[in-house]
Image (cartoon, rainbow, N blue to C red):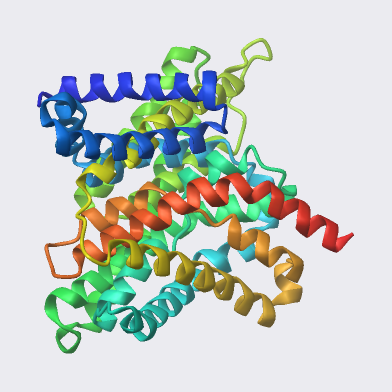
Length: 414
């Protein structure tokens, strides 16, 4: 299928699903679109079994999209830049300690806990997976997804302090999660006994330090360039060039795209680019990136829903998905609880917020993209189906009930 046809069909389908949600289902945007796209995929699968010709276009669309490359190499940079550009850097500085703890140690803890739970409990459900693959599964579902989090949290009733922590955590833990994922994936490829510590350290330095340094330098440079002009069109082009250039540079030099783009967004958005009070360039640029964010979000979540068509229906499909949901919630809760227990005073987070932070830790397209990028092994289908269940449950169920959880937590405090 031609690239332009794929893009055109995606935009058309996104517009149709968005209209149906706005006109009839009237659910929060992201949740409604994922739900409609998922239901549509189920219907397509049924229709495709009965009459393949009638569903050939949407089936072909789903099968022709390289979801992993489209998200990780193209869309992710724009979505992360938008989120970080519009994040209040002053609030983030105040919450930097809990954000750092959760986005680093929290991800590692969650990965280890999820992997161990899956390894020891899954055999009771006749699912057998080596420990290293259980940890690999944990690495790709442990980071909370900044796209899903920003889409849901901005319409929630979360207190400002918690919203900053959860949003900030989701922006930074992707970089940590991706590095962890790459390391564990390399171990599965070469074997635990053949992995070299020096190579692991070099990988972490290149991905993390390289990504942050490139993002900081180019973000600062772009911010200075945008401050030196008042023409809005030029300012927008500079911001677009920043995101695209960083994505290409990070791919070529094997830096972390998420860390590079998030750092650049924080630098570019930290100071106003207005020169003349009559020129509302900064506010206009924020609105531009909000619009880009909302449109790409819609297309992304349509793509997530349509990926159901590509999932293999293995025998333990439903069982794997169900136990994965329970285990990731336990792992998320413990990965917040343990740091909070030891660092309660310095983190400035109450025990009463743990359940809310657990429920607000949403997973999204990045988990599915990483699962789809896995090499063809006997465990790929189990990990892919489990990831899909976690993401759909996360966006629809957790997204719809987050405000109820917040209300219950506030009543218990009161």
